[in-house]
Image 1 (cartoon, rainbow, N blue to C red):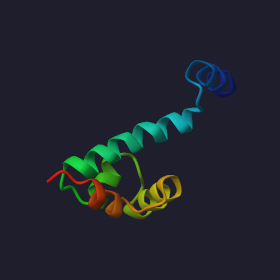
Image 2 (cartoon, rainbow, N blue to C red; image 1 turned 120 degrees about the vertical axis):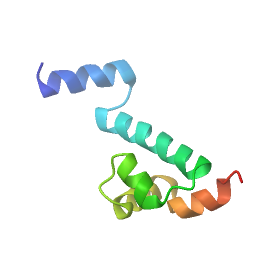
Image 3 (cartoon, rainbow, N blue to C red; image 1 turned 180 degrees about the vertical axis):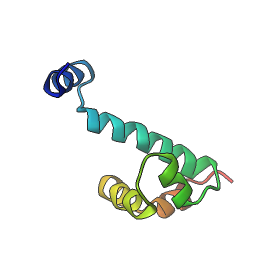
Image 4 (spheres, rainbow, N blue to C red; image 1 turned 180 degrees about the horizontal axis):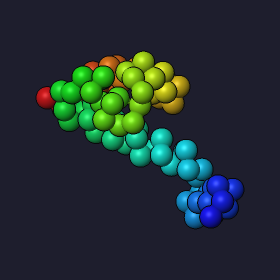
Length: 78
């Protein structure tokens, strides 16, 4: 199966590109870990496929308009 064929079929089946889908899965896990654990941002980044906490923070801010720490502070269930 070629890359083009896979990408086209994946998009038709899911409505998202493979990268968009992967990022949605990653951010769902990031949200869960931020709210329900006391893991550090570094631990969350490495556990969800981001190269570093800086990469996670940059991507998170781009999508959600706030840093992961701010999100955790606003949504933490203590």
